[in-house]
Image 1 (cartoon, one colour):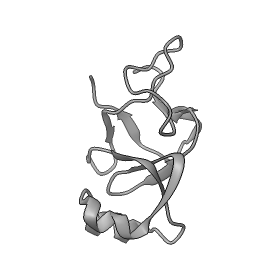
Image 2: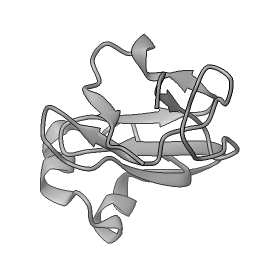
Image 3: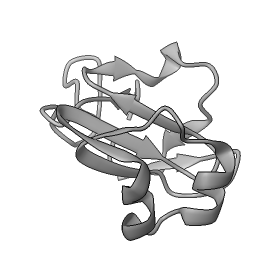
Image 4: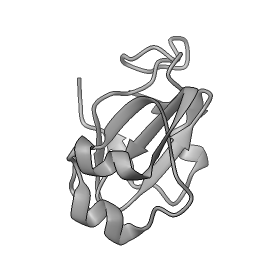
Length: 104
């Protein structure tokens, strides 16, 4: 993917390009070397912190405790970072995330 896009649950998955703006579903974190999980129709609770993800990734049953249902949203997380996204967003706009396309 180039550029890499994140998006809400209404955004289509696939290889993202400048012409075909699709959200990457093969994300990998270069900081923790974990695959980024994504959950349609959810957002993260504000009380989420680093230790919560470090201890509970990638088990949905444990993560569910801090998820809020929100139509149109998509919750992304690895072991060290997390985001709730509602609309198509270029990953480069968030300098704190160390996520890259893990190849399709």
